Image 1 (cartoon, helix red, strand yellow):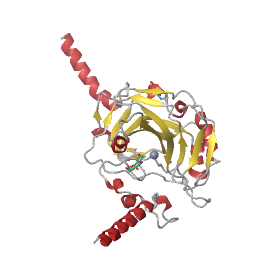
Image 2: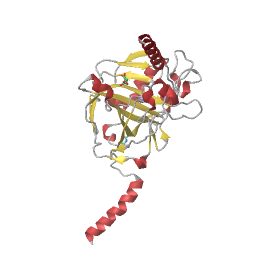
Image 3: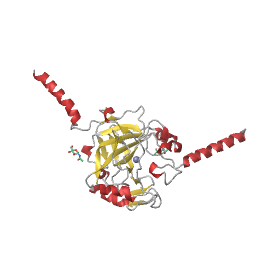
Image 4: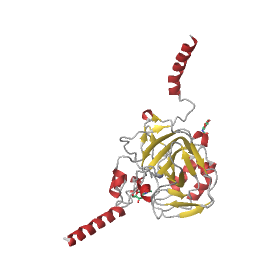
Length: 317
Ligand SMILES: *[C@@H]1O[C@H](CO)[C@@H](O)[C@H](O)[C@H]1NC(C)=O
Ligand SMILES: *[C@@H]1O[C@H](CO)[C@@H](O)[C@H](O)[C@H]1NC(C)=O
Ligand SMILES: [Zn+2]
């Protein structure tokens, strides 16, 4: 009896181990790695990926709800370069810069202070003659060219057990990136991509102020908010997402460095392209938005103008 139990236990351990060992990949890697699990099968790598509150999502703008708590963010240390150099790494899924936690955010409808621990990018490809967009979130079904994620972790937990179950453990700030004018502030970072072409490559570079990578603070009052997950396995459902309406601009030439200089592989066999997860069902969740735009969109102006005229007519009759 005891022996049977031990056999079953070791079988169980063995099967969990294989589950943990399965490799995940993006669809764009599957021809190269037929064994890897593409996004639709990520739940076989980690069951969390098959749950109901996953990211990214498509945001349907006429279904989002206004929430008045979604005020401005407070940024602390975003204006300074951290004191130690940045570590920039091609991890085989993206290019990721680790941060020392000295930059912090609060407010913006968050109940805690969060420290910036890393940022990374998602992008599409330019294998054909036109760029193919590769943001993770989409707005009314449209993707942007790229997406920047600055990952922040809650500053204080009452215990370690709290941390792993906390639905608000992480706050990710997501910025869309679109093709536009050349962005000089990105030049040092983009130049460094040349030094980390293949999986596992890692370099240091002079740190930049995080502020220099995102739109000016006055343009960050408009954003969407929902509860979701990491967009790679383990897909932990512990993320408060903020998706800013104002995009960052990079020139097409600058984007070429993401599309054509980075590889998924340890050799230069497979370009790192389309490293985004497809959108996930919203299910019972609601997407909220801050009332960021002071300027009315033309559609809103059409509604508001007659109302104002009507109210004024009441006032003056
Ligand atoms: C930022 O906001 C200002 C108005 O507050 C606007 O004129 C400008 O176009 C916005 N975008 C950028 C990229 O500055
Ligand atoms: C995700 O959850 C797993 C299991 O609870 C945990 O070990 C891991 O550290 C979590 N990852 C992050 C980034 O929080
Ligand atoms: Zn990401």
